[in-house]
Image (cartoon, rainbow, N blue to C red; front, side, top):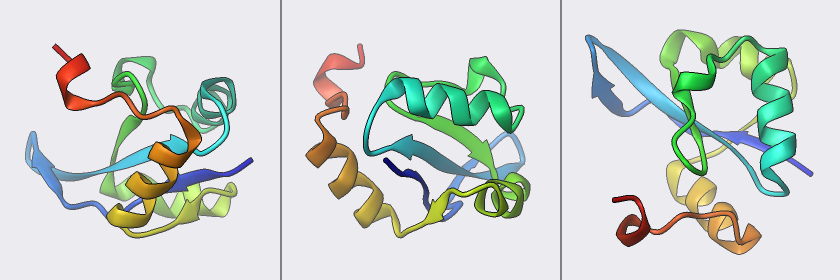
Length: 88
């Protein structure tokens, strides 16, 4: 059971954003996000969008910092990935 966060590379709303996922379960992901005060509105089907300034706190709380490619690879392997075709 691992919560992962990638590099903040996605610009929106005047800041950079990263993705927070679990490679085990959405329950684990939601519990971790709640414990770190990540707003529920930041959830997007299989991940949370988190602002760059939140990364140090997430990593200190136990999230593993990985590359975007590693995050996607592990999310797909977990079976939790929601494909782009199903996001509409």
